[in-house]
Image (tube, rainbow, N blue to C red; front, side, top):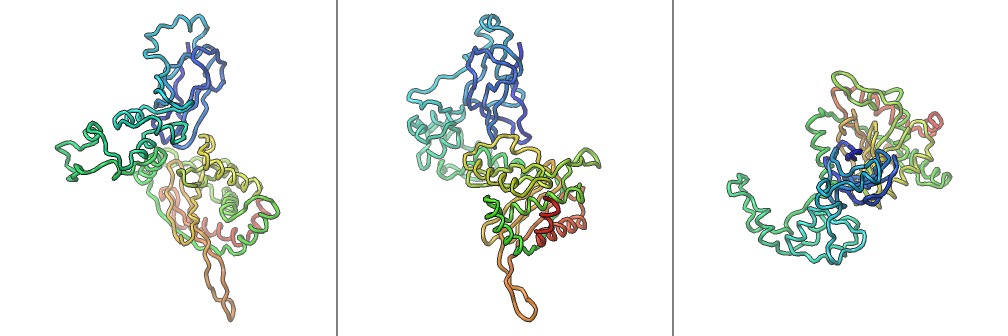
Length: 400
């Protein structure tokens, strides 16, 4: 018998949601077969069977599970599976689905508790049209609905609460609950602020020429090329000259070199913040990098990233490209030494000989772990990046 334990899928989550079993209870499976779909705060991941045998499921779809938790067993033979007692699997592998449940819809345990506490009709819940119903989804339905006495009692502060806030008149409509993805983002930000002594430097870059070249390449390559794509490519070309900016902080006074310039790029299309990774940005053609970013935006719309899409970034580029943004300070993500921020291009009037001209400029900011990088190094890194972007034809020729 082999115990099937939940693997550690990322460093930010302490719990995942079991979205769907991909193999039936009692089904024969082979080592490496996908048997369960787990959802983290950012992605969904198929997890494979650890051995050949017969699957005995121990956790219901929709339940939360933690890394290391045993959620199934893979038995050595069908006979062994048949001999397993009910005591080894109390309550059976599945929890009953409420009457009227939509086919394929999973309701997590916290969501079910809230539904029952407020007496919400299940039809309203399934009408949301979501495959997995979480507590935050149910909270959306509550709106101005008056909570039940039991729910109020559960949410009320203790009599000796020293906060001083009088919440006796509060209802659910007054509270905004962070999504699971945003809660994980908050945890990463808190950890960064707590553990990393970050400094910051910013530099303005003339992007007039690089934007013109990007428009031309968009037509020639038949894929969207913009300033973010150009910056990713330029950053990738700096690995050899600035290895510390791509290194992973290690114990003591050491940092591990990165073999390739893997650049994480923020993507937020309204469904949460994702940071998928462009692999080996320094050695791959610009057309491939542009294709990656187009694909990332499409995947963000469906929320179907896999953990492998989001892992392994050596440096992060955060995009702040809404009109009017002139300055942004990124956080340094744990496991990295720095992060870049790119703002929207803006028009700027400059003196040109005896007259004036209009150029496009953007600000690139660099937040860096001051234990590994000093201000002089940061200025030189940004200077090299500015030089590359202001002479784009040359850096594209040199770096492919």
